[in-house]
Image 1 (tube, one colour):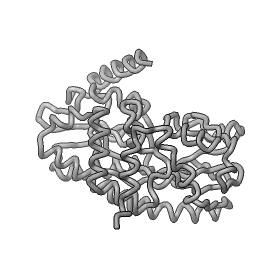
Image 2 (spheres, one colour; image 1 turned 90 degrees about the vertical axis):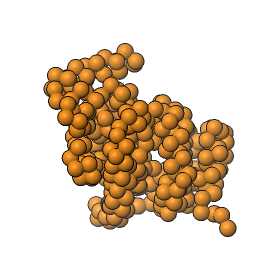
Image 3 (cartoon, one colour; image 1 turned 180 degrees about the horizontal axis):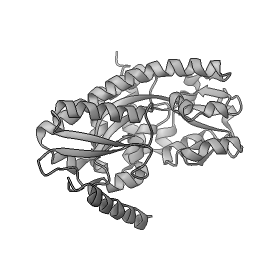
Length: 334
């Protein structure tokens, strides 16, 4: 794997040098301006892409054109792991991703996908807009070697399925596509389901062919992938609340002029606030669209699921127990 990543990085750097003689592969132009490559796995209309696009627009405005950001959507710069591994070499200068994707760099990033960590949207926003939220980003970022900036609410993850499920026991033996990340896999094993790591680009076909019976993602993302065509039941488990962040190599960010750093932070926070609010509106529209298409929206007793996962962190991820307790305590103080 390491050899493939190195080969990919080398090839990308050579292509960058050959095609972009105006900079040194790290986004710095001879006249002192910056042209950054932003890696995105999605296309326009997706939460991460729209966050990146608005960030690019705002940072150019705040720096009076000293920083321009070129967007590379659809995973055109490589997979998430390839881009993250190659950031320090100029494969990309900026990426929009969730904290959880950094779990291969530090196990602390697993906090992002801890099930039933947040009670609802208000609790999630209160944490991420607090000193605790900043501490999480800084601690994970330092351990992984990245600067994590801003935060865009992307909606709770739900389950789309080919059969109706409502109670905890219904998930026993359920075959679903899940991200190939430890936290997600352990979450579904805790429910005695059968998680199967499959690429998102192959999930639609897997559902068609009944290789899996469902998948889990935020509602709007699932609708963007047209899962309504293969999944009639949309089960509001709301098991994970997550956000997309602006991600940069930490050393690269720290070496930027202070005014550029400030512009990046301001642009990231602005993009997160605007796109996060849009996300709330999109969720309501998406749910109505699904109903009109004949899909069934299934409500579950999230309090029962929360109680079922009460010992999950202590048993499976004890190194995150302190953060879990602190996060759950936010908003409950009398």
